[in-house]
Image 1 (tube, rainbow, N blue to C red):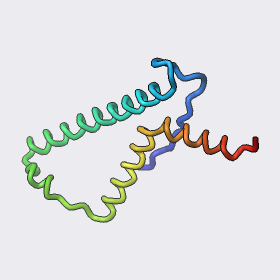
Image 2 (tube, one colour):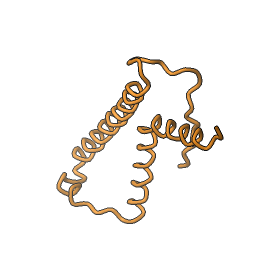
Image 3 (spheres, rainbow, N blue to C red):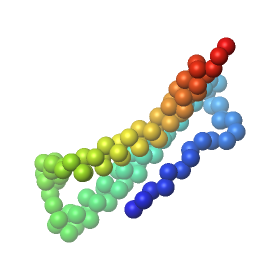
Image 4 (cartoon, helix red, strand yellow):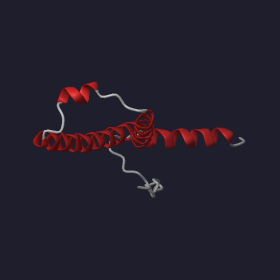
Length: 105
């Protein structure tokens, strides 16, 4: 299934909660990470419950499972996508600083 990449640039001014950009940036990062973790935990819990109900596998089998190269590549891509979402504001800020540093004075 192809996943369409959406442009993730907010329009307008960001709300300021702590009076500084850094506190707000970290709050946004923590909120994004917390949301990802809640969704992941819910999905994993669902899979484990379905598997247990059907007698498909034991938890020990999960702990000893070894991935093949294709699965490792998929996980690496998923980790990068998660990191890009969690650190979005830091990455955006770094790009702005990088672009500003290239501008002649």
